[in-house]
Length: 268
Image (cartoon, rainbow, N blue to C red; front, side, top):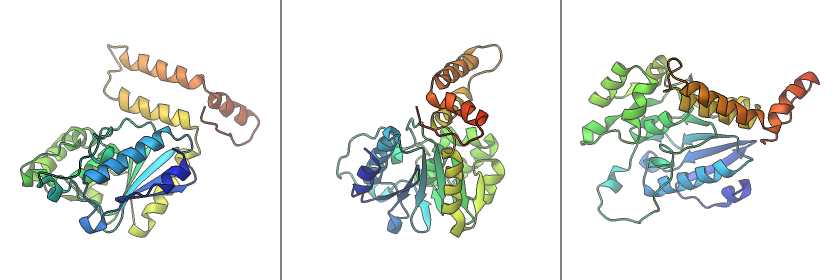
């Protein structure tokens, strides 16, 4: 599915826009604080699957419409026994929390990011947050848990004791607090959020796409492998770099440097 095909899809719960080599996905249920229902999960899942296969997409931004990034799972829908059936999403909840995506994902958190909304941010590679953003995992207040990656990812991205306090109390914290602990990369005024995310995407997409994707893979797969007393991390490192060195872009980079010109990446 190419750019025009994705743009022509009449999504009902999301909006899509292309800026250069970046796909912007906007969660678009503002009257429900962009709560994640089955349809939104299905549409994001299909959109990300198409973007993953689209060679013209080198980065993805996810944001929300209105005053919320996402208030999490649609509890009204969850309380109903029946409803329209959708195929099982490849990417899990919201189409992203279990997705195996090679393209870098930037979460532009424009407001409330509670429960599943915070889990979408956790599943992203970089988080840019508005000054108005707040993060929380209130699931325990509803008799459930943050099962879409919240309990699993949060203590990997912030200190364990801080993560434990958040998931046990269900209380939310400011973007500044999450920046302090390392989950948020940068905080900006609301009116600068999308432009800042796009500036970051431009920096990413100015690089060789396959090298970017390989670097992302190595970070995610290698972070839990020991560097000492085991060869696993170094074997993975060798495998990934050998794959990158076989690409045309790996030859173009040094050649462009020697010729004192900007490289022309082909993504192959």
